[in-house]
Length: 368
Ligand code: IPM
Ligand code: MN
Image (tube, rainbow, N blue to C red):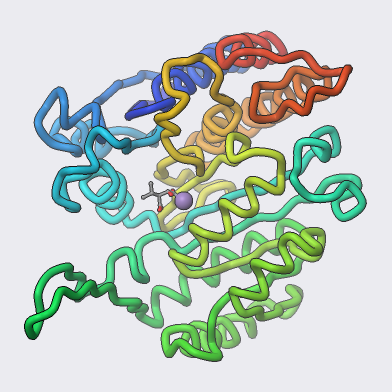
């Protein structure tokens, strides 16, 4: 029997409660598909600051290094916002984890199921039948990590500086991930940049064009990020795969999530070299794309689906348990189709049944 070592990092806010639901789904697929997991649960983010004095304790990093994959909840909240930037949950734990393991490829599948068209803020006629977009976000470069990064006094005035820096090799590798992903789908890739203004984007566009020569079967287009933000709400069905730099991807993926029905539906996989899914196991970190939602934490009303689908991506890419991953995806679809809705997905229509976070988790585990 295959056994996988997983580092489980629930984190802050709704992280722990949605993680509990994902672990129910994990138990269900383990018994059904005959594999096992060894879970090491660790503190991260604000929870780690409170319990261990820092956002990314050495024990947590060691458990992640020893694992086949990391299942991550969410970090951050107002309680820790007064701390110096580099000690806060986001810059003290999440970004260092991404960087430490070189998880440069962040896959965010934005799927609007036909059943959830009503939950989308877009007009029904725009998204009839739903849509399916994969956002490939570069995750370890760009403004998030570029130096200099500074907030303080310079020449007698307070200034703030971030640097949008990319190496060509960083663009090449994320472009390859995107082209490969497009190959496994509808073979259409849209590269999003701001090449009419930014030098980094001019380099990005030229580099994507060069890599495109290796993928003549994939249709490549380019779009400025402002236009992409607009096209996402005007005609989301235009997109198949989009690839973009870190900050643009952060912004566009939230937009993509909400037009799918809710931020609570969008999982993500952050992968390094050896992307997985192609017969090669990849180390990765899997987390919902939405945040820790401290305003609803502990109320048992959060949507656990993004966390559960993140587990599915983990099983697919880091464990190569494709059948188990398919079973989770199918269970989510069936539960949605049966009318169960957490508060974020509810529109008060008569066929739906409003459920709590834990009831949604139970229903999905039962459907598996
Ligand atoms: C995300 C989140 C993070 C990001 C935050 C929490 C640092 O918004 O994963 O999209 O900006 O990358
Ligand atoms: Mn974000």
